[in-house]
Length: 181
Image 1 (cartoon, rainbow, N blue to C red):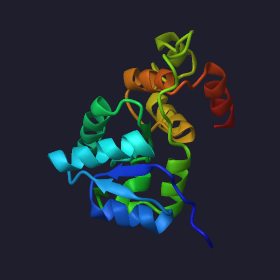
Image 2: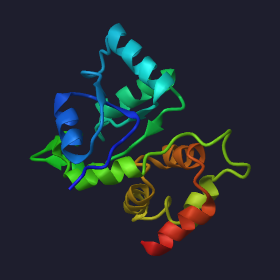
Image 3: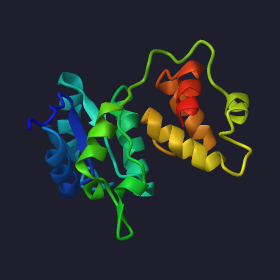
Image 4: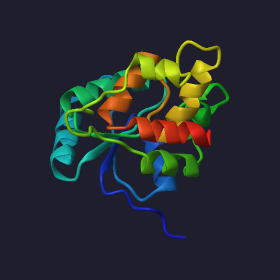
């Protein structure tokens, strides 16, 4: 069976992530080797960003989010792929390298990039409350499920709102996914 080919270059943390991605899809990766990204690596990422584009796909943990933020500061229009923490955990270790190939494929297929200047009518805290994504005992679980469906990962409510608006996800899209859940 032929593997799906990804045209963008995928920015990951390390060689184990590269191995897991290559087991799932036909893709080229750039490894940051953690938070201390070398100047040569930044140059390679910049070249990829300017030519074929990049997908930032870091581990769903604190270090991965910090690396993601650093890369996005320099390359704000990069696509982002997110993997559910549960799908990336094995024996207490969190990382893309622990995910099943299909989970990696699903995350990459849902990769998002910034959509224009944001929605004309942005989603806000009142929407989140109305949808039960804040203010309820099960709000965190609902954000996790919806974040996985939309491919925007799990985060706190404020960041969730930011991602919804940044990626151009509409109220209709959110409500449709919530009905499916």
